[in-house]
Image (cartoon, rainbow, N blue to C red; front, side):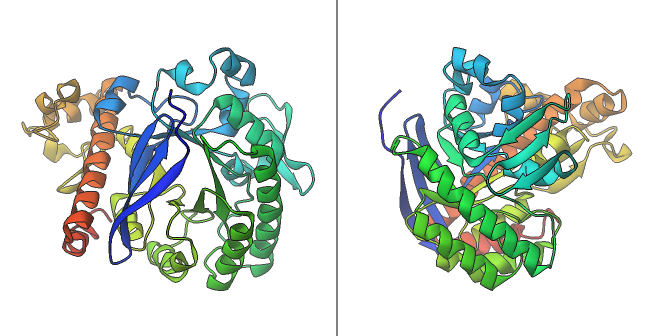
Length: 371
């Protein structure tokens, strides 16, 4: 592994849409980038070698879940998650902040202690402080770490959102101190503020004073309308530094991604490709295809004639329809792999069109195709 310092280079722009490159010690990441989600050290139903063949350059893992299983003692034996799961490219880890929201019935928040969880597995008490989150991420040996934040559920209550900003800012300061001066890795701050421009700007300004390697938009993709998400991005991206990567957490559909790139976002993650794959939903250049539908029963065409990974181009829609109806796990595996490959094709086309100055045309063609 090289000793390259973490850095970001902005290469070109068309409007607000940006092409850049994140440099890490485990390799470069071309942006805008999509990160398949490997919450527990695996991208569900897809072999690691196959993810590499889709030209995926970074995946996401989760601090809370990896702390529970396999646990930091096991990860230490492997010098981190990369060797454990046989993945030699960059990994970003979420801090566990999202689980504070998604597993809210299992935890309570204490400003000083952090998030106090009752494990959803066995009820064991777990205290995830900002310091503990960074310590676990260091054991995971991730290349990009996230500060612990409080991600509130969708609300228009400014008091709740302001409180989340205050807690998240305090935890961000403590996360930065615990992170230290390791220049080979990146630490990202996470903005909160819901759908309010003034609160978002307040959160951004507080994080800028702490100074991070990149900045994430948290508290979105939590149930708001797509148009509201795009609006708040439009209103706030100019307040973030141009020379640092911008990450929209937990997003999304190809249309979500396209609209967010149009507002200046550089990084995305979502379970959508694999979760959809497990329900028979495929993303293609024709739009979304529900392969459960009987209209595909006699369709001899593959999902992607040009995809030779696992010889996906040899499996007909008819065969995939049959696998789904027969409840065969192969259906989930093939469609999930196809979806990840499509998402990476989509990101390459986005980058190419920004570089060529044709992104606006590409945007208009595809923005409504996947809704």
